Structure formats: C-alpha cells, structure tokens
Image (tube, rainbow, N blue to C red; front, side):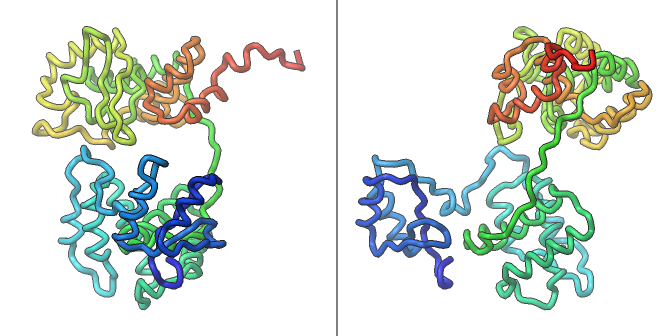
Length: 363
C-alpha cells in the first residue's frame, strides 16, 4: 500500500537486464521505504509483468494468488462451530470474511483455532474501533500489553500472524503493517534423553498399544501428528520403512522401522484390530493427540525420568542418538523430514561425540 493504493512491489538482485526490463513497464517508480520498484496493482499490469519477464527470471506470484490453498491434503477444515457459537453480549466475533479465507486456504484446524482465538483477543481489545481505522501504533500497544503479561516469544509471534493474516491476506494489503517488529528468535537446544532412559520408558508402558506408540515415536523419529495420521498400509515390513504422508509442510517421506517395533506391532494388531488408522480411538476414529502426550508422560514418570518427556523429546533423542552412532547429518535430515540442513545441525550441539574428542582442561 502506497498513498492508500495497492501496488505491485518488485524486489530483485542488482542486474542490468532486470533494471532495463523494469523501465519498460508502465510508469515504474522507486520506493525508498520498501527498497523496491513498484507499479499500480492492476490485472493488466500483472499480465504485463509476466509477459515482460517470461523466460528471463523466476517470478514469485504468491502475494497475488490469495485464494490458492496452502495445503490441498489437509483434513477437512472445520470453521462451522465458530459460526454457530452462542453469542456473548458485547463480545466481538471474528469477521465472516476471515473464516472464509481460512477455509479457502485450507489451513490446518489447529492453525484455524489459533488464528481465530488471537484475532478475537485483538479485536476485543479495540472493541469500539473500526478495524480499518487501526494503525501500527495500536498494534504495537496491544503487543506491548501481551509482553507485560509475560507471554513467550512464540505466543507473541502467533498473535502477530493472526493480525497480519486479516490485513494482508483477507483484505489483500501486503505492506499494511510492514514494519511491525517481531521478537528476536530464541535459540534453544533440543531436550534429549539417553538410550537407557528411552528403554526404561518403553518398559513402563501400560499395554502393547502404548508400547508401540512410544517405540514408533522414538524408533522412527515421528512427530505426534505424523504418528496419529499413520494408516495400517504405511507400515512397510518388507522394506522396514514407515511411510509418513502429509508431514510438516505437507511433505511425504519414508523413515526407519525398527525390528523391535515391528514385532510388537504384529502382537498389537492381532489384539487391538485397528481398521483404518494404525492407532484408533472409539469407533475407528483417529487417536487423540492429548492421549499420546499422556502415554509418554505417564510412562516417563513411572520410569522415574528426571526431566519432562514429551513425544518431541523422543524425536530429538532419535536424531541425536543416530548422530552419535555416526549416521550422516544429511541422512538424518531426510529421516526427520527437515526442509533445511540448518534445522538438523542443531543436534550437533547436543550429541556427545561432539565433545568426546575434547580434553577437559581440568583433567
């Protein structure tokens, strides 16, 4: 948005050819504020840009495909219960266009709940104000209030994402709050437990189903959501692999299947007889995320593990133990489904073989 008008911003690396092509566009101007060239945002101009640069450069059109789903394989997006909620006096509810856009883009249900919750918190903070009258100072004041409450950086970022979604995606104003500061990214090391502690947790499960859940979380390095989405046919006993469909970032991958886990899964299958999903709740429905968390926590407490153990701690431990046993970092990246090797490199900071070669100065 420049002078209350939508513009097409063109950001590029210094290049004479691109600069020459930009000059051939209709009425290009330069923005010092955004450090990019721009022309009026019209359908005609969008077509001119495409034809001008076709075959010359790669163009990122993401800002203009606002109704394009971000995930086509997500579970059915359920926003009806937001619409059918009992109205509370003087409570400002999420605008219909916000819910509609979340549906069209097929955000995960957990993201929908998060965005709606944070955006309603925001609009009820400014209950008497029209949404289009709220400016950057107002948003900063709201975020400052959250900071004074002592919320985490993750909580603050979720609030910013929910607010920006309305102005940038729903209203189509990509630079509306361009300069809102985000909290500095925290750099935390993953929590890891030893192999002996993992085995102790497995030994302290209540039944074969719980045992298989923990064996797959650790032995295949699965995220909790990936475990819950596993179907019976995803266990490939011939190739000793687990197929993960629609993991984080909507990516499919294969990961390891433990021989120990496979033997226990065969016993579990005969006893529990799952129908569709590998782990099911009542009436063949998908097993609950909270149930998995409680299984891990309960077994860890019975095993008298000193730290808080979650499904993700088991995943971190899987990656770290592989690295300690000499598995290549790139292979671990593939097994975990990380998009970037930088994400996987965090395990080098906690793997013991990183430190074993260093002689302690005290010794």
